[in-house]
Image (cartoon, rainbow, N blue to C red; front, side, top):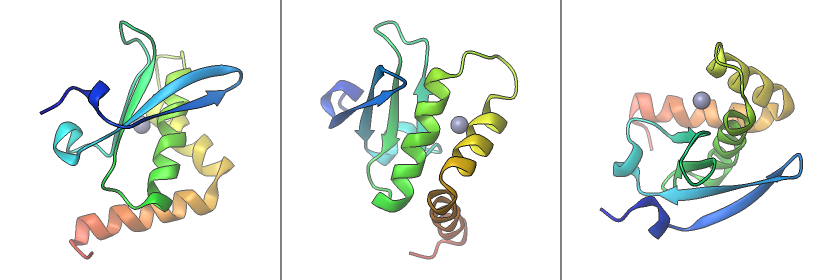
Amino acid sequence: MYPFQAHPCRWYVENGQRFPVYFVPKEMIEPHLGLAFPYAKDGPRASVRKDIPARARRWIVKHELYHLRDKKKRWREFRAYSITAFRDPIGFLLFCVHVLRLRLRVQ
Ligand SMILES: [Zn+2]
């Protein structure tokens, strides 16, 4: 398996700060859909599965970007889900539909 740096990367700007998001194969981060590394050695970065449909993936990217900027220690998932869902409710809905499809094994 190639390291995350070998996979397609896109830079996102959040509040003037630039963050790389790597689009990686499913096997690399399963069972997660996306992962944030706010304290990575060479700077904050995130990985998101590239096999996810674009409409759901866009929301996961926003969720991971939220994690990268979140410096608080507690309730991290709660904040990342609720604030990202509030800012992009349609994207959140599409994300939920995707997760339900995965769980029910409908494609
Ligand atoms: Zn999260």
